[in-house]
Picture 1 (tube, rainbow, N blue to C red):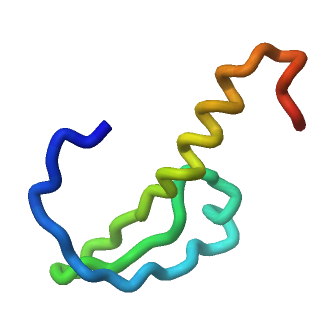
Picture 2 (picture 1 turned 90 degrees about the horizontal axis):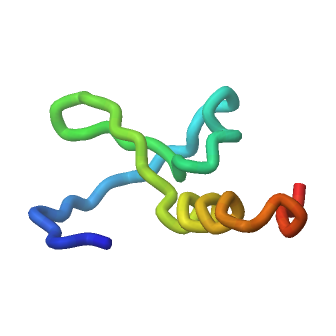
Amino acid sequence: MVDRINDTQEIVVKPLGKMLKSIEAFAGATIMGDGRVALILDVLGLAQAAQRDRRPPRARRR
């Protein structure tokens, strides 16, 4: 749950490289105005992974 949003920015999301692509938590990356790289969270992917992990072992699909 989000309590509040302090600020918004328009960004360009770049795809992740081969080594990070398999990590479900990230949708991509962007370069901030000051040159720092920021990873973009995949909120839907995180929610789906959390829901999968909450199922009993027999119900999990792999």
